Image (cartoon, rainbow, N blue to C red; front, side, top):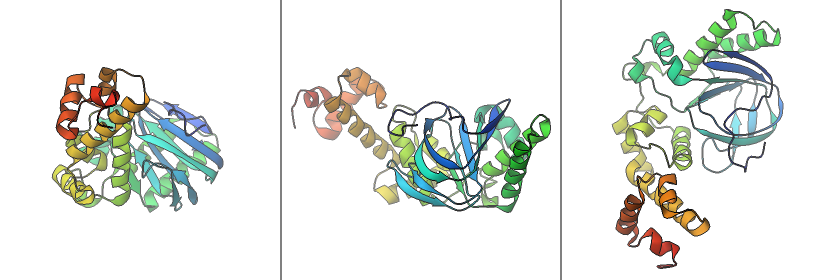
Length: 284
């Protein structure tokens, strides 16, 4: 899979896959691996040995990563995943419909459905999660995949991967914005400029209380989330104005502005010029 091409909408079929209602689980064998996807559903993976390579999970550029055995990753729908490994480990991957499973997951976690939102999770190894993942692996390797027991194991695994730390149970969200999650949020912004990037959406993605997220974000980048997103949209629109033949209206919608006039008003306020003037060579 070419990692410089547009992302695919489905996960490559690497290994033995079992599909159930609202999710599938796949045991991905070790070996060279590349990925470039943006899935409509949530994605979770846990590796069975050390894992290293280059990935965009924690940034908008390919960077080296090094993960311990049984560290796990959960990403929300539409989250861009791109990377490459020359010797990737055996991995258990689960792709699941978060919204369809929300009632069942919330019930298992004993929290309200409103408090359960898709978000980026990068988790350290945990004995119980490791034990369940290994049990799922054994059943798949033994071809014991026809009954509901494997589905039940996978559901337990999904629940545990989504389980917030004990101190977060009451509110449903945490108060600390970790470095890797923060970088993943920045990556999500750049890859989803045309979508809803409200403060509430970004805070839910990070699994952090809204006001805590806003404060931590401004402390790190010197801008509020709103102004950061606005300037990323302006930068993206300027790139398209310079390097594409798209109409100004199409560029406005592609970069998250509600209309061409909205983008024009924003450019005039923030840059002192209009998109049409920039495209025609003014103020360069």
